[in-house]
Length: 171
Image (cartoon, rainbow, N blue to C red; front, side, top):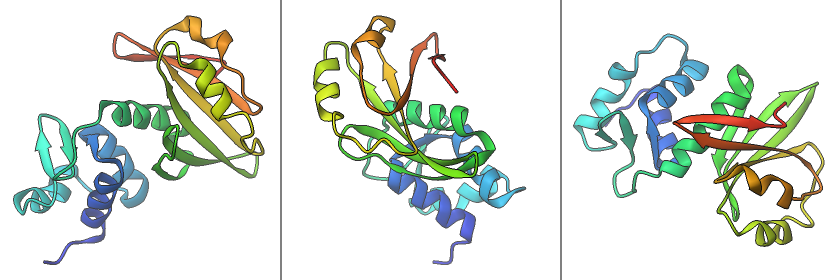
């Protein structure tokens, strides 16, 4: 089976992140392949079962649709815009890690979902984190969580209300 570079890119993105909305895939395609149309790119992989579609969500077969990852990708797109360098599924506490150039330096951004009541655990886990050229974006359930989160690197907070992200201390 012969796939073009854009099709391979979409399959790899879905394999890495499990699921993305079509508008998110369009954004990532535009950054890497300029004028390609989403439908032309995904038609063949969908018809051969390499990826699946449910409503406006594309996902990798055998993986579940992950709303937290979809939210994290929305945040990544909002924060990085056209200057997104690279992204990957997060490790340990982080949903997603991405890289963006800022002031001539490559910065690492980690998105951390914080369930209400787990702030102390998050603080302890991030206590000795390397802070150089790093920002942590905390995805909160409630605004009251902000004062309880302390890390030794730059950070800001986001809260999803009515399907919109509200940022606190955003760049």
